[in-house]
Amino acid sequence: MASIKHFQVTFDCADPARVARFWAEALGYVVSPPPPDNESPAFASCADPAGVGPRLFFQRVPEGKVVKNRVHLDVRVGTGLVGEERLAALEAECARLVEFGAVRGQLLPADDENESCLGMRDVEGNEFCLD
Image 1 (cartoon, helix red, strand yellow):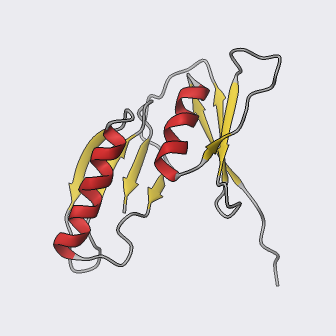
Image 2 (tube, one colour):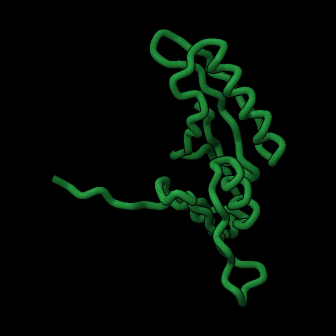
Image 3 (cartoon, one colour):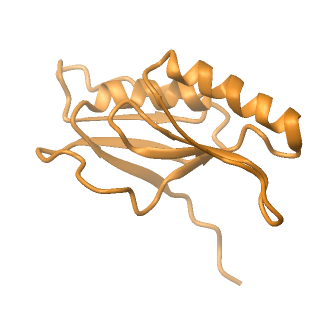
């Protein structure tokens, strides 16, 4: 039997502190304090205050985002909800995150296999879904 491993999710970005603040707000995480002697760090992170979810780490890279993400986060705001109730939860969370710099994407309506989800982009254009 394999043991469970802790992991973090790492984002390449231009402004680590800004992206860390966005994801902390989106997930209810807490931004970790920067090193005391570094005014504009090349990295930032945020973590689940309950210690359950993975740590998110943001590192500055020189190149910008040019293609679709191969991996993305699904922010689970509609778990257990269906139909109009689910759509209302997705739209409410979308509106909240847009206030923090997210961009609304395409709504993928429910079909025979999946419930509705809403594609979005964070403050640097990284795709994620409200699910």
